[in-house]
Image (cartoon, rainbow, N blue to C red; front, top):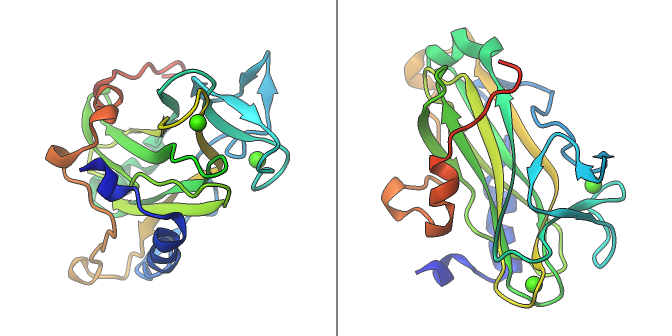
Length: 230
Ligand SMILES: [Ca+2]
Ligand SMILES: [Ca+2]
């Protein structure tokens, strides 16, 4: 079944470029600030990718970065690798609990030559305990050497206080896990106050049902998060 999702890059990128990102949500005001820190993987501290929990490394050539000098390579040895960070959204709680907040998330993805290593972005929503509420993702994707924007827009569930963004990389060929990510993003949109509830329908292009979820992400989705600054 998984192979059905792994379509040829140019074909799916056409769909994504016309179908996603923050257009078409005129009932919402998008925050200008990307909630993710070090989204372009340019900051390295003590040989680690700053702000991210990562099994990966940064890379700068073949292909060159989508922006700046570096990007994320999912792993040098693992078939399945996750890079993630947790975002505190307590500042949005009033609007979140009214069901008035949506999230646009994703990033630019690429791969190595013609290999079919693929990746996708995942959001996991947590309440204040923090217990998991739900999750969403972009569809698994590879594009060989082309940087391609991948995005999905979903409603932020009521009671959400923390959002975990993760990038799942899956190796299909070779030793390196060549699911690459650069310019990751998570933007929040808030419903305009003068819009009535029934006019503000959210049209997610890539809803993912729990029961059809990609097997390799299940561990990550059930993981507890640690809140260093709570
Ligand atoms: Ca970069
Ligand atoms: Ca590979």
